[in-house]
Image (cartoon, rainbow over all chains, first blue to last red):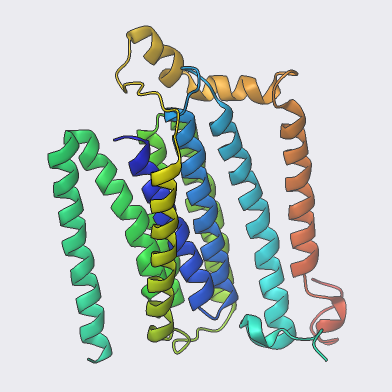
Length: 103
Length: 214
């Protein structure tokens, strides 16, 4: 299995994340799509770290992936708190319903 | 076609595709190919089910398959530490958070519109494959073909002690210590902020039930 196979899986996962975001009308689905996209980016980081022109034991891509996971965890916690608040305010979790700033 | 037949057709096609991918991987690259095909199918099939399903709980559990598949891909890419972190944080943490949000909000079974899902699948699939084709045509990647089974010393140095070396790199002053501490601060701030945003205001609680208990 070469680099191409991993990059293909990553691209397909990224596409599925985009599809989830644009085709579902629900904030929680949008969060799921974002998680998929971050996972796709992580696969790319680690695959290029493994197959790219790096030294045998290099860690750069893996460290980037670790930091991406940390950011994803922080993002998920805050985003879900926001989802609960939006539901509390608007009685709905459709993103099109949260339109307080629209005149 | 009614809903049930559609559901059966979708899962049938998914099962056939899984078997096909597994067989193709086994024939093309032996055991590693079969493992790769298994994890790729777990990843992409989970994502596909997540897009397809009407029930958001099933979507959330399909996401578990996606995250575990990504962890398997990490194992194939010789990053054992990342695979464990993926399972601990994504499957154990983020998925539980998503399930909490699912259970605290009302279900909406009519929200999925099949035409929109299919149109998005076709459009995004075409876009991603076009870009991938262009990249494959033009990019020249400098790629090493390090074999998985290198010399014994290399295997011991790169594979066995992965978590060790990541831990040292986190705290070595000339490597990632600043980013590591910043990540710790970020996580603290994010958790406190999440608690602050999600808590119920004192004015929301009825006077007879809540005496400042929040």
